[in-house]
Image 1: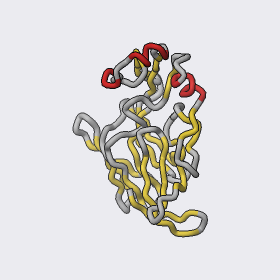
Image 2: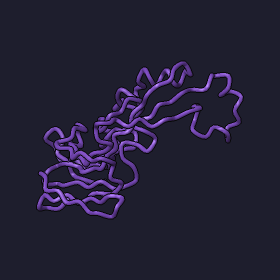
Image 3: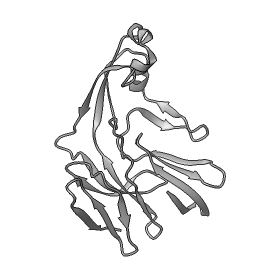
Image 4: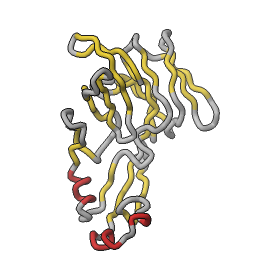
Length: 191
């Protein structure tokens, strides 16, 4: 999403994305410099993103699964913190509005020797023999969030029993619209 943000007291033309991996990215669209990459949902696969290289700093759990030594729980699940559905941005509030998921996954690694013997085309699912989704009951499985692009922090989250897989639309009057799988449309007044 393209937007104009004030960063460090200076106006910047940026491109933003709430990525599936659980990090909210802000880049200067004139030169590609990564300005921010912060978690906007529970994300345990990486501790942070290096702003100089744009590469993740792996968490201990990710290192263990890459080394084939431990079963781990990871957040977000394979479907991501959000997915293909579009977010919206209000220049009046400076917030991005995103439907998010709150689901994890458990990975169980194959032994390293078994992975070496697999033919590349047979590696569906990467190097795991089993993945199981983790539902955080009684917590909700999703949220509609108003996110500060530079911090990834939600100014307000609306709890959802299931993630809403629709895009969002925000109006100048502070109305946020989204839809759900049943075809119902939700309208929330938030600032």
